[in-house]
Length: 389
Image: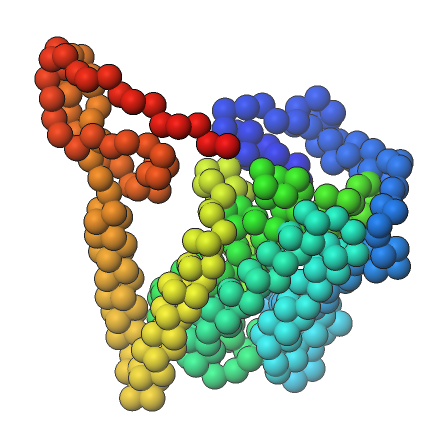
């Protein structure tokens, strides 16, 4: 994943990326691992040593445990009552999705404990940001999955895949709004760009990772990639039919290939977002979680409950969700236009007005000209603002 991310981001941004060690730079991750293994392990004098050393291990263990109930392919045995030892799932429990949500909520402990135990104010601020971010988006993430669970009637990950085969659709068709909400909340849950506020280098040096180096730093990075894979696996299983693909999933090997391809598409989406979107401002991150995602998730649950209770077909749920999505897009476009103000732009001797969102400019310190004037006419000198202390 580290090699793929570096190559894909370089391709998107017009760079080369790793291309020296081995074909296509395939030995670069090995070189990085060797470098981190032999890098000096420093423990800050202000750190709570025991917790400082255990925190990265907590993050990795929690990330691995959450993946235990994810099925990556169809059963090898034709008899479901007598599963084969080769079945591609560690544990098919009847509360599989609840297990993932519960264990994933513990991932924030590794970050919070590591940031607090580092004895660094930047690390502590990054840890607090991660905790606030988790609280803000965890509820929306769970509610986004609730709609699909109502249609499936089970919390088992294997049962959810079978329920989609029984309905003859993937749940993304019945739950487009839930799918979008889960993707946004999932990206925020794993602290990936544009929601990587806990490790914002422009503000917090490196956030909760500031005092970590070498193998301890790599454990946090490993946990982040495992959480990315888990989120991609859950969205593939719940909304895209898991290993199923138009009847070809009856071949166990092909079912694994189909599942891995779906997961790879969402991992590419994670990387694409990081390479293209800027980091969101922290207050807007909180507002997005509480004032946008949470109300929409509740609306989605209500719509799904009505459709399931009255026995309506899945396309009614799709139609109602589509209406909500379109309404949100129209509302957001109007909100952007309403807060925009015209500014005077001079081009080729002519002056024209251009509308930019207010968030682009420092409206407090920048003067804005709304009138249109002739570029050749004499203008009064602009008085400079007093310098700030």
